[in-house]
Length: 291
Image 1: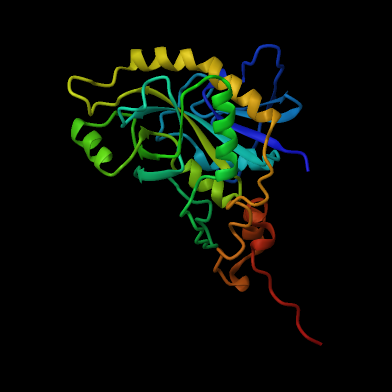
Image 2: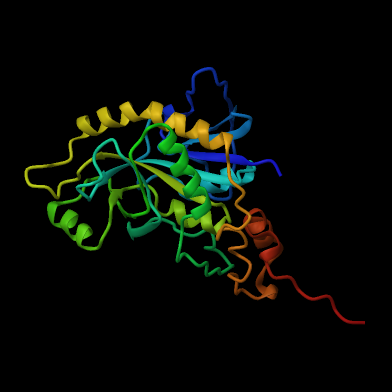
């Protein structure tokens, strides 16, 4: 099986030196993705780049069409999904410029569509461990190979945004044991699991949030650190594309097998078409009548 790496992140990530991309425009049952997907061959692997906020960064975290984005990557054949995300650090040991590979998420968003199964079909998908440990390990290896300081594991708390957290909130999230704070990986990570796509995050720490005395989040400082890390993130993508792991044992594999509880009689042809890409054989079917 040929692996295909889907990368969701900033628009600059797909501008790899010497790599030509072509645009793929996708229509989904959940509206249009954030932007056209850029397809390229990197280290012999087909890679799909999706600018999460749009090519001109015109979409706020609350406005990102997360369902359309994940569905579009799945429809183009993605077998692995890497999220590249800027985050604030909630731990002294995670300094700006460091890389974190989270293995857990806390959802503090509000009003975002967090499931594909919103019409006529109900699926209860396990999210106990939302990150694929196999893919996460490979992302960590690729990041270390670039010389980055990598923190494997940790909890990413996702806030609604676009505002940054208050000091009280920042201290609260630290008490919860969170390592980093961001605005975009939820519901992205949950939707990837519903789509049975192994998912991992390359979290680039840009600042210390506002929990330290006299610190506050400054967009100018964040952008400076983020721009300095673009080449590193590109390097990680190239290294990961060259050594994508076998994820057949990922918790994402078969995530829908026993999750759909809707009876076959309620799954109309229209619903079957709507969910065919995601659920496929997991959708219940009526038994043939006995002769």
